[in-house]
Image (cartoon, rainbow, N blue to C red; front, side):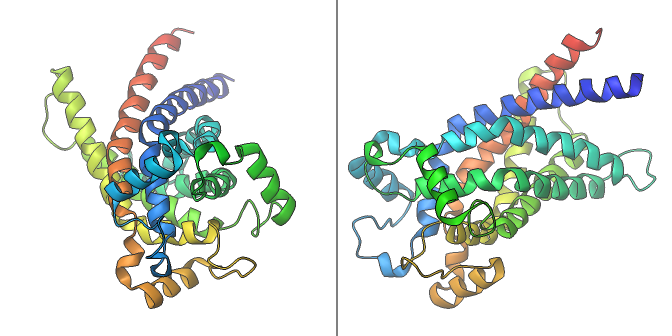
Amino acid sequence: MGDVKQFFKDAAIQIGSGGSAGFVEVCIMHPLDVVKTRLQLQARVQINSPHHYSGIIDCFTKMQRHEGVFAFWKGILPPILAETPKRAVKFVSFEQYKRFFMFGSPSATPMTYSLSGIFAGITESLFVNPFEVVKITIQSDKRHVKDVPSTWVVATRIIKNDGFGISGLYRGITATCLRNGVFNGIYFGLYHSLKGKLPHSTQNPTYDLLYKLSLGFISGVLGSCFNIPFDVAKSRIQGPQPVDGVIKYKTTFGTIKLVYLEEGWRALFKGLLPKVMRLGPGGAIMLVVYEHVHSLLTARFSDQ
């Protein structure tokens, strides 16, 4: 009975910590996610369009000019609504997968952290994909922010027209699983494997914080660099198709092949810079906030 009680206490702490970390990260870094999505969705045929973006600065400038400053937070409601349960799923499942992937070792190994991260990412994807479909749909809308339909309207429209399955809210689920699995495998694997290995001062809180932020930043950057082709495929599949009524981007690897053949290999890395700018610092912020809140909650409930 004591083990069950401890499990639920640990899970509650992980939920509170993960939800706090996710909320802070989304509010700060969401504009870069919008810019990343816009860059990933555009193809060469759009080059003469007034909404074609040559880079991050150009995208920020044109969005502010044509859509208003609040356009940078388009589609933020779905990730905010999803963040607490999403991070709960991510961190709770990561901790549970760690027990499964110990392989008889007395302590967690880099393989344990990586495999746990991969499966935690896949588990997270099953929950978050509907929110991603709604978010991408809103982020791709280039009208002024006051003319963009609400999250609820967009979600109900998708459900009405396409349903809940792989043509609707679960469109692009394979790409989401691959994107999140690859990212979290590197992100958790690198961070936890190196956190206790590299020399740093734990006596100075400032140095210790900077150490963790730097390690989280590197982990987030590397995870982003390796999973970006899946992210591009996901955006193409979940976003509006080039021609209304014609589904051009269907499967993950089919989309990757099509983008490569039509636009070149560089197109598979579209949006990488804003993605790195978001998930580098964002990944660092999330892990540090998670660990800080986790420590506070653990201390608060340790005697209960």
